[in-house]
Image 1 (cartoon, one colour):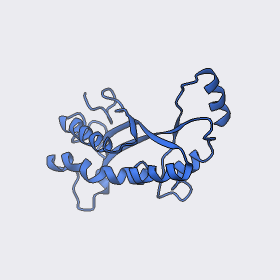
Image 2 (tube, helix red, strand yellow):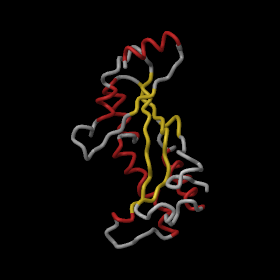
Image 3 (tube, one colour):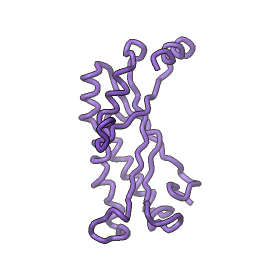
Image 4 (tube, helix red, strand yellow):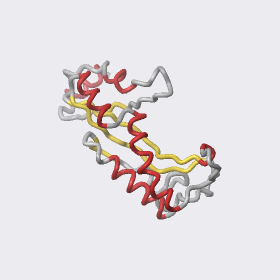
Amino acid sequence: CNTWIDSLNKMIPDAKFGFTAKDRPSDPRSKDWNYQVLSHIDPSLIDTFYLAWHEYFTFKDNNLSNGLDSLSAEQVLAFSQYRTQALMEESGMDSLSIDQLESSLGIKVRLWLTESNFREKGYGSGNEPWVFKWAHTLVNVQYFSEILTNPYVEIMMLHSLMGYNSTSAIN
């Protein structure tokens, strides 16, 4: 990466470089993946690390222990309030984790959420109770609003406003 960054900086002096990384706490090799990736980049080549990551906000009906096969209207609209912070912490994209990265690396770190959306899995294509409904869009609005409370987030993109049957907010 350092060779590419150095070469591209000469051609495009104001370029920003996004590094795709995301901690995975359940995998011992990648529980601190963000640090592992960024620690190999020469900080003299750039002034800010931009972590680009994808975060799908997923409800899986087969993972519920209470026997529900779907969320009620109230539950789906409150889902992001109960899961967003945990998702951010698990992926190492929460404010505390980014503070620690900045301290240990000695350079600014900013976040680019380059792909994200609410998903329902386990229903079969076209049978999702909330995808393609207004609730889907409202869940995304709440989810993104909560992510934007993180002062390190600079870019957020919805993956597929329309078109894909598993992630479209509009059909």
